[in-house]
Image (tube, rainbow, N blue to C red; front, side, top):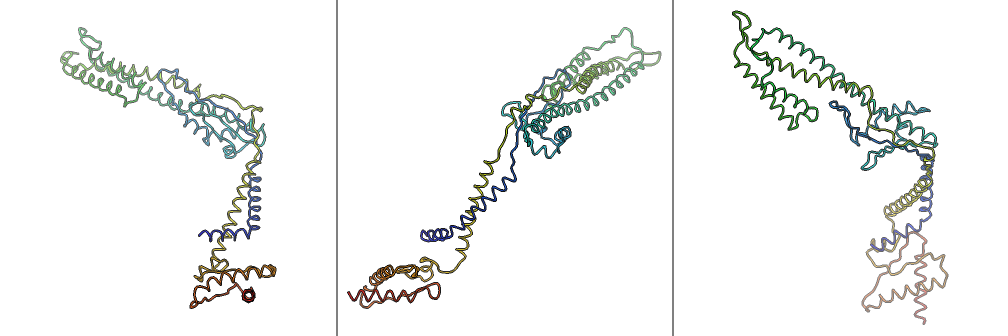
Length: 415
């Protein structure tokens, strides 16, 4: 195996000029591609800082965004389209996206924005345009959310106002109470009002699945059931001679009171939502604008040279692989190992190019070969040896070989 490896290496070394040519050609192709692909450019850098401003509103809570969501929005097609339209001179959204890089800092709210361009002025203009549009774009998103909430709360507020009016009309339609009875809510009703208020406050802080919210809802349901039972067991009220009604006025007034409380809370949320829709605080602000002195010039010569070197190594590998493939695919006998493998016989000697050998070298070769053959012939008198002489083609030295050996034997016996 080792000899085969050396034979293959020798085959490659004999064709070193092909390896060198492949390295030069592929290195030139790699450098040419790099020169065409990469041009000198400038990088301008600006920074945004994300903030979670504490909501000054008591009840209305706008949607908060995390750092990954913030980065995703900064790379969104809508923002790219908006910034590309406002850039001067104009640029397409796809071209801007190919020049843009959004780099969030680890464990920080600062996000770095970089833009590449042919000149430092162009890069600075694009990145500053982008960050200012990013702040406005995020404010618009927040404003749109507040407008949706404002519309929803306004509709709910109108419906609740109508419900209060209907219940007040129903209360007025009831027969007049006995003046000796109290018109205020009972102790159960007062507890229900308190529990309902606590539930409303809890809903502004937690979701419906929070244990505290579930407990408040359960308490309100129990108090409503108890109040209904108290109203059912209450004695009738005489409204007019010959007519009686069930005393449900307390329950109706309690419902009106709860609706009024909810209306006040919803009105407050609606007003806060309206304020946010008119003046949204946004999710970020510009932390640092790009300046001309901070622009970075990038020369791609090192990248081009590296690509050329890698192309050269690739060319060497490819040419060597092709040489070895051709060598392995060739079934002709070319080396001593090939001859041993095919003939399954030992090879005593090999003769090089006779035309390049001096007569003294030829005689020396013949003597060494005869000596090697003589050691094999001297095993015993009853043993002989058959020698074969082979070559790749006609006229390649077989008869010369025999002639040189004959001279060597004659010289040896003459001595």
